[in-house]
Image (tube, rainbow, N blue to C red; front, side, top):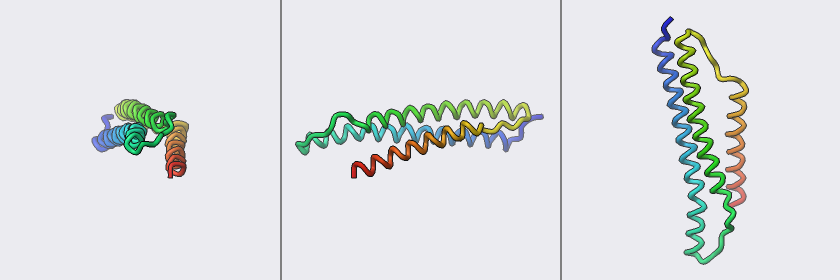
Length: 120
């Protein structure tokens, strides 16, 4: 049985949501990583010192890498769902994968919240 156009288009919309999310993580990671550069430049202008062990560079890089992982996961899910649709099957995201993604995103939120509280 041939997959319906609504199912195929829904799969493509889901893939585009993965791409948007991945780009958001990569962009946000870039902004966070560049924040340490901004603070160092500001410290030079203000004639102050800033600690060199910057958490923002490490965290920003980790965010960008997580964005890449999300993009790869989205591509894999798109291909797997497309194959399942062509075989007239339904393939849901595994519960374990859902929990892993939720825990990682939650951990990122905790780190961001901690950074906001500690820097204010």
